[in-house]
Amino acid sequence: MMKRDFKKLIEELHEEYSLKFPDSASINKRAKNYLVDGGSHTLRLIQPFPPRIVSAGGAWVKDEDGHNILDFWQGHLANILGHNPKLITEEISEAFKRGLGLQLGLTDKLQLETAEILCKQTGAERVRFTTSGSLATMYSYFLSRAFTGRNLIMKMGGGWHGSQPWGLKGVKYHSNGNGHYNYVDSEGIPETVTDEIIITHFNDTNMLEDRFKKHGERIACLIIEPFLGTGGLIPASREYLQSCRDLTERWGAVLIFDEVISGFRFHAGDLGSLYGIQPDLATFGKIMGGGMPVAAVAGRKDIMNLIGTEENNRVSFSGGTFSSHPASLLAAKKMMTYLVENEERIYPRLAVLGEKARKTMESAFLEQGIFARCTGYGNDAIPGSSMVTLHFPLDENASMEDPENIFDPSVCDVTLGRDIFTLALLLENVHILKGHGAVSTAHTEEDLTFLGRACQKVALRIRKYL
Ligand SMILES: Cc1ncc(COP(=O)(O)O)c(C=O)c1O
Image 1: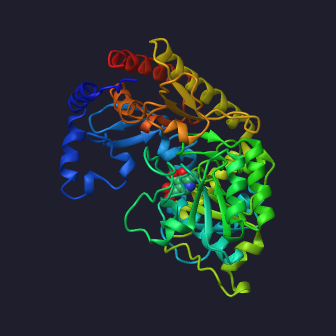
Image 2: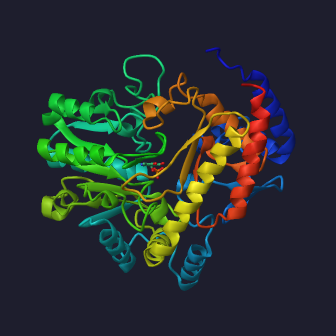
Image 3: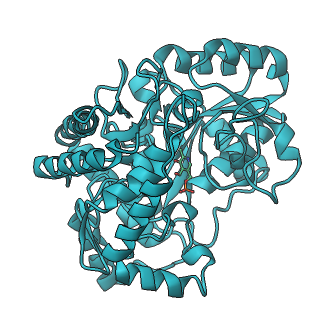
């Protein structure tokens, strides 16, 4: 197949984009004098520059140039009720008026109340809060290694568990070499990480068995997102997740479900319970924090207790200066309570909207003869899903069920699906970062019609370059 040449299309997009977003362009120019690349999160710094946002409410955000932009990125998928839901903003502002909200550094009842809800909804016995999903997964590794007295961590190629030393192997797809995800994706990481992290294929039971046969007695933990997130929005098959449970039990390793994305995404609790599988530890973040920076490790008390005095504080898990920050826990408690109380109303609606978003995007491109497919669909364990990632497979029969295919440039047009699609959609006032997003309860049927029209315009624009 001839390599597609998008040079002209990218030039055209950059030119139009710079004309449409002049204020964001000039802010970006200034920002680059002080911030590396003009910002503090690499993913958000799209090329040639990101739109600078001034306010956000529900499904929409407003930028410096006065555009209203329909947002499906929704705070790295944290905002299940849309941006700045009154439920949370009012709760926090009321608390500030009462004298609770900013950093406390002392212990309060709020932690207990928030932990109670999290345990009840996830089957965990003990919880400890911290400030980011990255820290939560890092602590879950410390706990697993101390509990088992072993070193190795097994994870899925394409699995993203945050920016911490052991999280940075096996994230990005590499076209060449020995094992597409068998690389450490940052410099400056301890050299031991290369050997301590073993990569396996998502949804591949045979490979999992082989890995355990080969390394089982040295494996401290297996970490998996039951619904692979950054790796392509793919649910684990029932058979695969059950194998993860069975094999970790058989080999004496800790099973960690990373539920930073999936927690409270499909129902008011953990995704593991929809599969009927209880992990030993789970990590939570994003949705549970109600838009505030809060995350948690939750799980079996015999493992979690390694943090505590009973076990001589064998594992150091202090969570940081801002752990259990009052405003964060107020938001978390309010959000989780709301999702529990309104579960039957919220999740079926999100599932319908999610299905509609995926179908709308796929058909907008198909109508122009461009084969596009979405991931983000549920399966027999997950009745419906609010999530979506759009892909442009080069072969209509390519399987979209594993990250080996989705990020392989010989299987999917990755340039088109990530950078070009993001920019072309922004020109139509829709934001889906790298084609990856979710609907929130704030999205309406009209919003999805708007999305459909935007995708049609993008399809018309790119058709001539394919
Ligand atoms: C599955 C998963 N785990 C962990 C993390 C890291 O969380 P945070 O960004 O809060 O550090 C993320 C973030 O996107 C994630 O998707």
